[in-house]
Amino acid sequence: MTQEFPFVRVTVLGHGGCGKTALVNSYVNNCCPPVYQETEWPTLYYKVVRLPSDDEESDEVVSMLLEIEDTYGSERADEGRNVKRFLKMERTEIGPFTKDDDLTPFGVYQQPRSMTFAEDKYHTLTHGRMAFIIVFDVTDRKSWQEAVNLHQMLEADMARREQERKERSPAKPVIFLVGNKIDKDGDDVEEISGMAEAYSQQKFVPLCLVSATEFKGVKKLFREVLRLLRGNQALWLLEAEEESSDEEREDKGGVCRTQ
Image 1: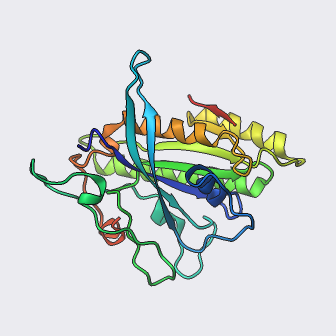
Image 2: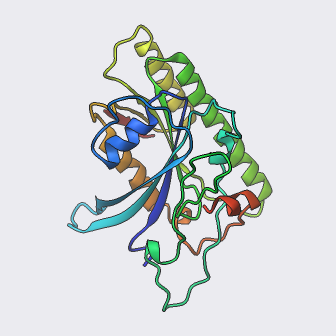
Image 3: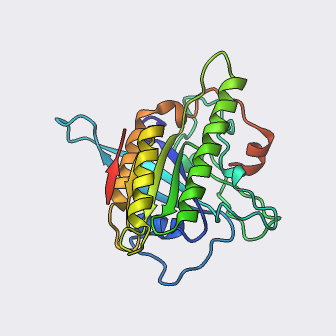
């Protein structure tokens, strides 16, 4: 059942004000918040997605359940906030299972729970992080630099995991850079977009340019992310072998160019 109905998580990161929540709502709810409101604590969204088969001669449609983890501004460090908690890839063990177990997504998981204040427990449904969308504002240099910092932190965490597991490399997450607000004018748009393109080619990380408020490139972005996730079963199969950390146990939880 897990192979027939993959349950995957996408974590959205970025500097405050870059449009993370607008991007998520544009995809999940086909609308954007009319007034900007800063995301105070991580928020979970869910969507059932149906993708065409990779086989061009097949009419088969593949269903996936998507959990989106929308995060607060990555620069924030007040009241215990720390973006590094959203970069960890350790998996929470679920199972083992028997042939009679209910393996549909809501058959083996506890109810999800978002945070409303610092002391709240945070429960995701999926058993680990699998993909990251790093968002930046194409009109804001500080936002772009923060996107680079986040990607470098992810690279450092992946290198640490590989070093700790010398016998075999852990599954690498799907990572996309996303330049938002391409509908806006600004003196730095062309230069920032050029820097993003160069960095994308240098690091072999896909780059998408979108407008969340005008719905440009949003569906294509998530379709590409999910297509790559679906093809990497080691990231989402419940039976995959991976140690879980104490912190993860506590958590419970356009234009698009691909290299």
